[in-house]
Length: 59
Image 1 (tube, rainbow, N blue to C red):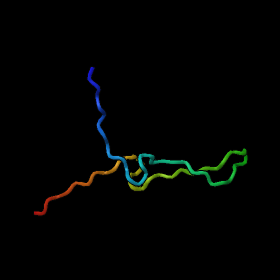
Image 2: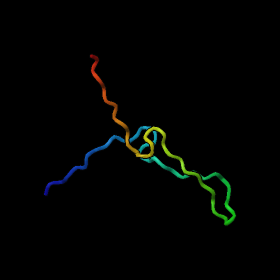
Image 3: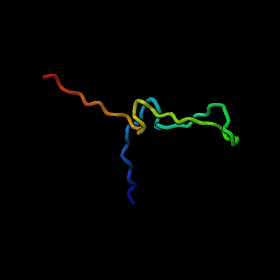
Image 4: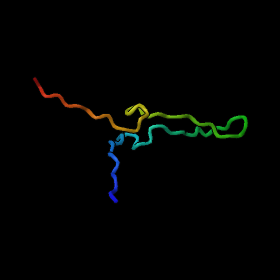
């Protein structure tokens, strides 16, 4: 049986495909859980994929 190869998409070089992450602040909430913040990659706008730049030929 033939094996299908998925189309490779370019992964964002800044976030390596992990566009949104939770970072602990080191503080605890009133219930005892760790307080976290969410950070989103600015380069790919949270998609995890690199934006392909189209080159235009000079006219």
